[in-house]
Length: 452
Ligand code: SF4
Ligand code: SF4
Image (cartoon, rainbow, N blue to C red; front, side, top):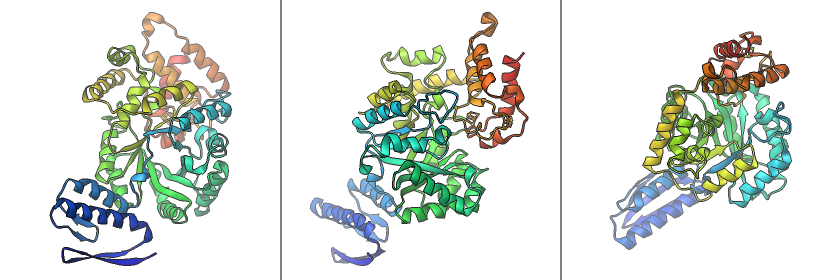
């Protein structure tokens, strides 16, 4: 419904431009603030288009809501609680096959999550060997009323080879999830190499069309590149409502990931942030003893992941922290400290940075275990598994020990997948690695360590 409103305030006529019905909320808030001003005797208000000028303590709060509404989202855009269930590392019945998800265990995890008042679920086309969206249907959408949860999923440029692919994937996602619509929809993992594909196939406009059709409630993207590129993107596509970035205390000042820089760009553009990899693929759950001691000597009762998740959630522009929980135990732990979330103190944030210094001085290959690299590997090399074993060994005093159990673990894994030395250096894995790791060089180190 379009219309025009003329409001008289202290003999001044203020004209709002044409606006749609959905902007009614903005009008009500304006009326509310005007009433507040009259009752409190604060200065006259003048309102012109989207700019507001008035002086009282209400101003900042109101202006932020006004701006947010103009840009397409309101305060109810954000879930009540800051923890999201990332459906990307779900428990498996067969560790060798990511798609072999233990659905019964996931159902129990979903039940705990929902019982405790959490609502945000995050899936994607290729998570858990392309099984994640189907599991979302089995464990969530077919078991709970649609309004009781929100679901996010994504379109990845790696699967878009034509204009038709966008709709084909989207329709298959609706079918797989049984969700009817998506509360949040993201263009997945944007970085400089992939951006041309998203633009070639007009994916930003396509996503806004989906929103106009009511099939998507909120449009955004996940991002793996520099703050400069993020700034360019948000300037070029201001309709994008939120951004998902990798953010954790280990990557806060990292030269590659630049969590802080990307977060600050989101703040500058007034975009809510969804955090991925808060525990850096488990690196902040299992860390060198000296780093762990920083936390345990302060409070032995809190788990190591709790510090990492609370670090991310303590940032004011963060609306959700995604945790790719893999067990009931992790679900119990994460929900325990996020149910009534308490932000970290300055002292506690500094403890995180101290631990980061120790971890960074010891981590050999900063792989998060996302497995994006393995899908197209012609040699079927178990890249993240090998990097994880190698990282563990590099923390050991190998000269003293001479051998670790990871030599056996490596041989077991290599009997099912390609060995590190089978790499033919085709480079496809490095093109898709969101951490920009020199995978080929790292595999040579792995081979030299385990295959001599
Ligand atoms: S460069 Fe090596 S590890 Fe990477 S995809 Fe090619 S064969 Fe696999
Ligand atoms: S090497 Fe890169 S793409 Fe592969 S699992 Fe590690 S972080 Fe992910």
